[in-house]
Image 1 (tube, rainbow, N blue to C red):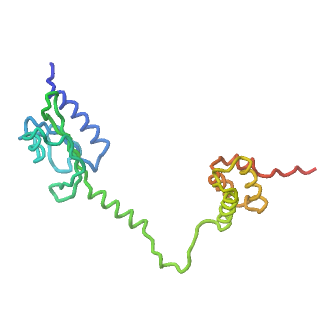
Image 2 (cartoon, rainbow, N blue to C red):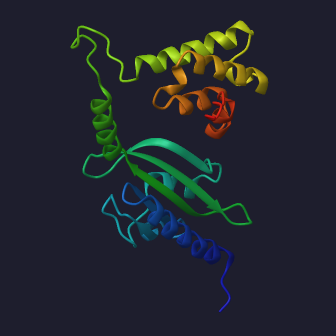
Image 3 (cartoon, helix red, strand yellow):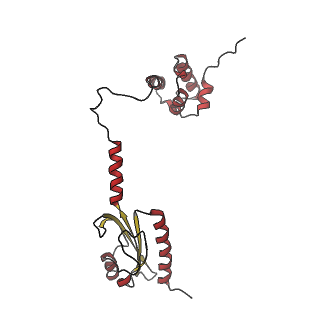
Amino acid sequence: MTLTENELLLREGKKIVEALGRTLAPMVEVVLHDLTRPASSIVAISNSLSGREVGDPTTEIGMARITDPGFPDILQNYANQFPDGRPAKSTSIGLRNSAGDYVAALCLNVDVSMLASVVASLSQLAQTQADVVPVRESLASPRLDELRATLERFAAGLNKTPRALTPAQRREAVQQLADAGLMDLKNAQAVVAAMLGVARPTVYSYLPQKDPSP
């Protein structure tokens, strides 16, 4: 059986609804409307957050597309609302055939109330109170801070950043840090490697090699 162009558009649109619905579940409702039959336009729906089902009629935007060929092809991220009052963010994409007539509309409706609760929870989790502790606390080793500052000063003395140092300058810097006992600190090699932009084995190779005992 040969399908018409409009039927092909709808067939392919159903695939998109199924794929997007699975990918964006459970927060996004995906709907495909057949605009050639507005009274029962919904031909595919995934994650029915609105409670609608196949065979339900089109929306006001769908009717606007049907009656106005100049209606925008894409309406993106506009405010909407589900029947129970939950806020939604919607995108509507009109699909035209080769004659330029609207045949279908692919719509995505995001339940932003779910996102809002997640954002609120994350915001509360990240919130701090500046006046609770009478002194400023750092979880980093004070001597690691000294190591960072020493390496920054060495690079600044050459009018460079640590990452801009040449291999010879990096070696000299690491040797100076070792002479000051800073390379013996826990995680020192990892910190220096990150600041220099090199691998940890490279930093290790810069360390002064101790002479073997006779």
